[in-house]
Structure formats: structure tokens, C-alpha cells
Amino acid sequence: MTQIVETSWESLAKHGEELCGDCVKITTTPDSFTAVLSDGLGSGVKANILATLSAQIASSMFEQGARVEDVMATLAETLPECQVRKLAYATLTMLKVYRGHEAYLVEYDNPPLVLIRDGEIAEIARTEREIGGRKVKEAHFKLREGDYMVMFSDGYVHAGVGGLYRLGWGWKNIAVSVRRWVQTGGDAHGLTRALSRTCAKLYDGKPGDDATVVGMRVRRAVTATVLTGPPSDKARDVEAVEKLMSGEGVKVICGGTTAQIAARVLGKELKVEWVPPSKRQGRPSRKTGTPPTATLEGVDLVTEGILTLGQTVELLEQCQTVHDLPPDSDAATRLARILLSADRIKLLVGMALNPNQVADLIRGEPMRMVYVKDLLRVLEERQKDVVLEKI
View 1 (cartoon, one colour):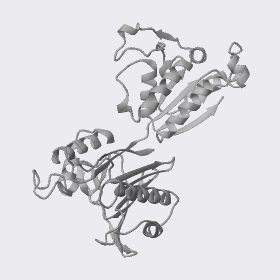
View 2 (view 1 turned 90 degrees about the horizontal axis):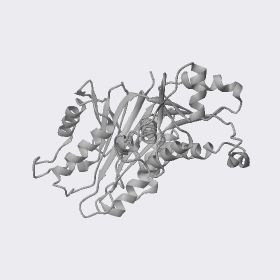
View 3 (view 1 turned 30 degrees about the vertical axis):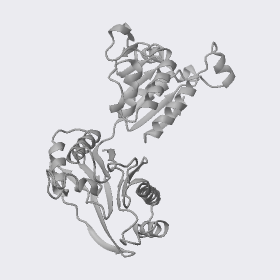
């Protein structure tokens, strides 16, 4: 079973400061997931710089397989120590997950990571050792589907001090809040948003410290396969459709001619779902107009080609997660929702040239490749694992 770590994070800057003194660095590859949270000493610009440098250095080194001793030594050599209070440059929490299952945790001066498993607060066996005069905690553990994890800076622990919580929200109360929320079965975005709202309320809207939370959920990976454009050789029509139908997860066809080829190969009826713009759900159609969708048995979404791809790219450039999309049901929004919900995406791109399209003849490749390349860029920027195959 392929599983991944879904993640989301939010930061609250200390009241009166424009920049948050915490930094989060998330890195994903086909084989690993790495989350780093660093809390810079103090607040404001200086703290932000220290936290950012710490997170970037740690993330890069851990991704390259460096030992924790090397990471801590590099941070100590690169960043300063407060000469007055003799405190470290920045705190650090790093979680690296291999292939969705094997987790390695490093904690230095940050609140402990919270793990919720089977609806309960789970204990993580940590070992402590001193590295360069600093006490670092480490843990190795296996993740299961349905696990939730939360890492946060000490601004969360101190939230509500002197108010609702005399000594602050505290780790235990935060863990209990996470455990209760997990019962909703929501995603990492919902968890992070709920914790951030509660933290802001405890500070009465005026955080007394930088406060950052990283919410994570372990779930099965979501895959999508998209076929767009006729193959370069008509003899490969069957091959192209078979690649789509044998693909995992959600199946999408972008392109009228492509859809007709699929219908012929599959021996199924292609039905166009034309709905007048005034009767479509959600917001009005985009300025350029949104082409209708179609239905084809065995395929989850069938849309027009180039225009829909272009509109989808525009949507993705404005949105980071599926939660940012408008509640529309037009072709571009539906395609964007599928792509943002997927972790792994395979793009099957037919390379047939349109003899009536001058741009195709001049470029030597189909015009749709311009949009496909833009689509590939925005998806990779959002940490999606994308494979492009030309047919």
C-alpha cells in the first residue's frame, strides 16, 4: 500500500511585528517527505532570518542524507549565539519520512511532536544525546495510515497565559485538542486551520510570541492520469487509451478529438453535457467562456482541450491547495480540483500535429504542449509528483 504524509502549516506573527520569527520548510520527493520547523531567537526580522537559515540548511542537509551531528555542527558554525543570554540561534524540529512509513524525528529545544494514533495520544520513544554541547532528541518509528502528527513552536505552548490557561495552553492541552479534532476525520489543512484559530483566540488576537503549527495526516496516496491530444501515429490510438484506462486513480481526458478516439476504442458512447452558463453552479463562467464537459463510461472527467488546460493553469497559479479553489463546477475548476487533490499525476500527451494549426507546423510540436509545460510547472511548484509521457 502506498501512503503519503499530507501536510499544511500556518504562522502567527508576534503582535506588532510584520514578519514571523518562525520558519517551516517542506520538501517532498517520490521517496521521502521532510518537514522542518525552526523558531528564531526573539522576534521580527532578525528572528525570521535566523529561523529561515536554520530551516533551509537543516532541510537541505537532511535531504542529502547528512547525519544529525553534521547538521548541528553546520548550524553552530553558520549562525550566531546570543552573547547576552547564551541561547542558541534557533530551535529545530525535523521529521523525515521514507516511503510514507519509516519516520525519523529530531528535536532541539522545540515542543515535542504530537502523534495521534487510533484516536489516542501515542507515545514516541525518544533518545537524548548531547551534540556540540546541545541536547538533541531523536526517534525512529513506523507510521500507519490514519496517523495524525502536529509540530509547533513554543508560541503555542504559551498561548492564553494569564488568561484562560494560567500557565499557557501547554503541550498536554494542545495534544488533547488535536485528539478531539482528529475524531472529525478531517484533512491536514482543517487540523492546522482549527489549531491556528484557537491559538489566535487564546492570545485575544494579539499573539505575545510567534506561533507556528504544522499539521500532518498519513493517508493513501491519491493518483490521477490525464490523457490529452491524439497520438502522433493513429496506430497508437489503442495504446494511448489503454495507458489511460490502466492508470491508477482518477482518469481524465482533455480534448474533443481525444475523447472521440477513446470512445471508439472503448466502444462506449460519448455524451456532451452542455449546460447554459446561467445555470451552472458556483460563480459565473470565466471571461473567455468555459467549454462544456462530456461523459464517457470508465472516465471520471472529459473536457475540451487547450482552452480548458489554459484556464486550469490560471486557476492553479492563484491557488496553493484545493481549499483555495472557488466552488464552481465548470470543466477547468473540476480539473484543477482533481489535480490539487492528487499526489501523483501522470500526463499522457499525444504529439499529433494539427495540419490546420500554423503554430503546430512552425513549432514542430502541438500547441497544447505550451499549456502542458505550464501545467507541469505549477504542479511541481506544489510538490506534486508528476510524470510526463509523450505518445
